[in-house]
Amino acid sequence: MDDEAAARVALLRGASAAAARVFTVLLTRGPISRIGIAKATGLSQAAVTKTVTPLVAAGLVDDRLGTQRAGQPGRPVSPIAVIPDALTAIGVKINVDEVIAVATDMRTGVLAGERAPLRDRDPDAVVDAVAAIIATLEAALGPAAGRVAGIGVAVSGDVEAATGTVRESGLMGWTGVDLGERLRARLDAPVVVENDVRALTIGEHWFGIGLGTDSFAIVTIGRGIGSGLHVNGEVVEGAYGVAGEIGHLPLAAPDRVCACGRRGCVEAVAASAAIADAVAKAHGRPVGIEEAARLAHDGDPAAAAAFGEAAAVIGTAIASLVNLAGPELVIIGGEGVADFDLFDAPLHAAFREHAFGAAGRCRIAVRPHTFEDWARGAAAAAIRTLVR
Image (cartoon, rainbow, N blue to C red; front, side, top):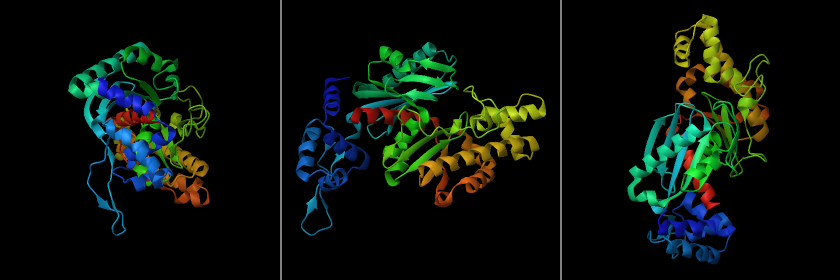
């Protein structure tokens, strides 16, 4: 990290709670006037000005954006905003067979991206792959590589973000892997390890749908069934780093074994591998998820039944989530949405059957996310840690 970037990072890390609130508002809502910041934070305009001044001096914030009217005659205001390229973040999404990385500015605008195959899920091999793709990415960044202030790494499973320990990941086959410690020993910038869906939710909270929505949930379907919660302006993390894990609600038959080793999980029926296995068993031969989807579209009874069962269990799980947390919107994403027409009707039917009272008014929307979006979420997690 170059000296200028290091000074900016030190200023943010040493900021008071009030200064952190101000910078967060600037980052997520800017350009915004000092009056607007005061309203959003509850601080006086004098306190806002005192907080903004060193941010401007450090080159983190621009207060020379011209003037606007505040809605009252004779009272012009000067909007201010974060300078996006003042610092850079890197986000990495670890899949079972691939590593995806992006470099972003402070508002998660993508500056560069890389993808690389992952041929070995051994933790040491994964650390090697992450370090290699980050090195490639930094080479592509040029001078911006000297402004990398943080690295976010997103992986499926039960992740303790405070330490970066992956306590359990059925998809990766890991238990008690100190991924954060291993990565910090290899990389030059601060590292944050997050659950992948929670990282995606953080990205949507700060830079996506969360800006205009008081509460929402993200449910991802595909290799796993994940979920993240945003309630009352905050991403719900849980006392132990686990919250909203609908993929492991025991809503399936107890004879269905999940990749996590437990019985009856939603994932045991609704994950891509579970659907493909059900179709393969019915046909007496190996079947992949792509072929299973083609068979279902062609009217194959076994394939249609497998997708229908998966959709009904997911719909029931979403109803349970909505009954408990009360979000106004549920976004369904993940690679499985490419075939969402196979899930749509039975999922909504199960949701309507099990949603209680006014909870049934919760909107369900499909929003495809690419794996680059997941990596952007990891970068957003790194930025949030830096700021807060």
